[in-house]
Image 1: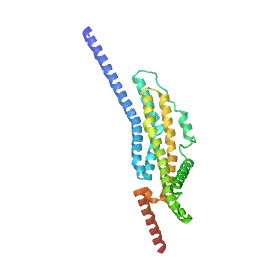
Image 2 (image 1 turned 90 degrees about the vertical axis):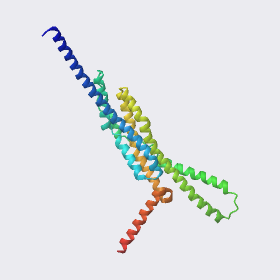
Image 3 (image 1 turned 90 degrees about the horizontal axis):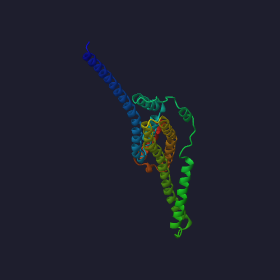
Image 4 (image 1 turned 60 degrees about the vertical axis):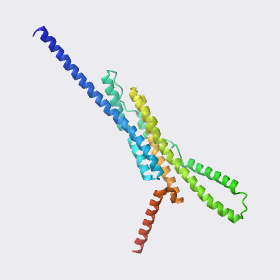
Length: 269
């Protein structure tokens, strides 16, 4: 083989190797992008759940609220998210010819799964809110009606009527606070923690990404308790004033009526 033929053969070999390397780099980029999309889709789904909560809570649709809460809890799963994080970091290191990152499972996730995290909001706090609002309402009522020329019976009757309204107002505010707690937790995950996780991942910071994932996990673990608090107080509001729940209250009253009639018919038979 002449010198020219050898040179051409070497160039063709180099070109083929370059093509192979280019194909490998392209496959790496494709896999990196797929794993990044998987991680981003979690944040998008959490933000979508937060967006949908607004109407669900406004309509007192507790079943839909519970479904949104459960969906977010299910999304924040280190067993599925961390492998995607590690895949991005590993493939990026291979592509860029950098040192390979650790892929060790962080024990913090196991410890967190067993942790007893204090809830951000408790029934005691809600009871205190309700008591404060009722006390303020009583003071305002006295300031407004205190000089009215009523006998004791008229005064008691008027206060009983007005107090019932104030109690319902206070309960509605308690439900709003409990619902707002759910929204705050989910918003924090979607709007703050998850973007920070993605920034850490973009910087190749595994420790930072793990820390933000742990923050998201801690927040998600608050959600079942937060939902129970919301449901309990929504039930209290329904018992006190079914009409306060709008269409949902009418639906529940209809179900109760149907069950009562069915029970009576069953007894008669």
